[in-house]
Image (tube, rainbow, N blue to C red; front, side, top):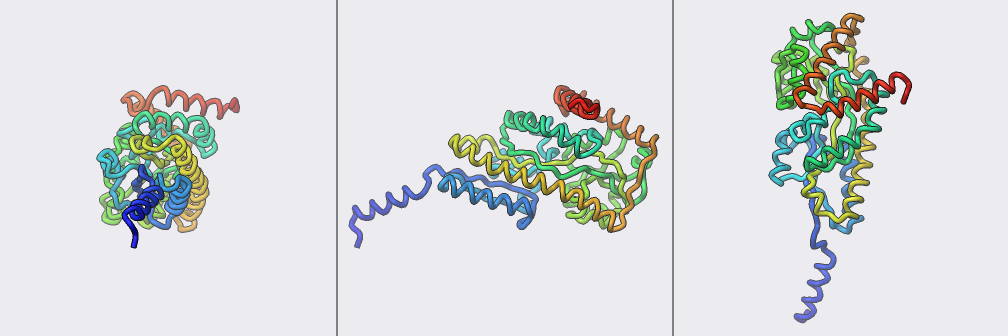
Length: 333
């Protein structure tokens, strides 16, 4: 039988083996369990927990069970969650400049994206930090293309469609307004049903998401014009992150940053493969005439100018990006 002193000794040993100041990160994502995101996240989380001797632990809520981006952000502010994988549009009310890469038709190809991101990602993450969120990197989804049930190419033809935009995304709404398109906002889970019932007949989405969400089964045509660059972030609240020691912060940032880098690289491959899959499935990719391209480009520039004028994105960041693109296209950088 243990003596009183023996019980005290056992209790002290248990306390010594259990971190007194363990910090738990509750992180939500729409990625389903078993996806590449979740596999990498769970591996990284286990690694961080082991290397911090249990001082940092994680609990994940995959598959969108915590709701859409708006619901997740509310729960982060209420301290029910501490982080999430969010789209740039989902964070627009927290840090509007995060949408700078999504300005319509800003990039001609992915090489331009890589050039700009290599110089500007750090600026966006610094800005996000000032708004109370720690970002571990930006993960590409790909270019979004207009997909519809009927063939369109001119702006006038698109205006005649019932076009979807994400519910609660003022940036997308403002961009559509600049094109004089009257969109129909819907939450992500309602889009497939909207296409099936005819509530909407057009979406702008990256090919990989069109396949994952099965939207490609309800459309026939793709406008062969990269309208918008889409991406997401793994981020946690500064409030929770600041509870870690500096060494543990560095370890978590390094390990989670590696996850985002791996997802970003695999997403590039997935994007190219998804385009090929849609073509193999028989979706028709419609080309634009030179005149139509000029019209789309002029309206895209107008949309970007409107978003800057209304304060959705800062003029300084847009100017930096335009300078980078101009120099790159001229072979100066």
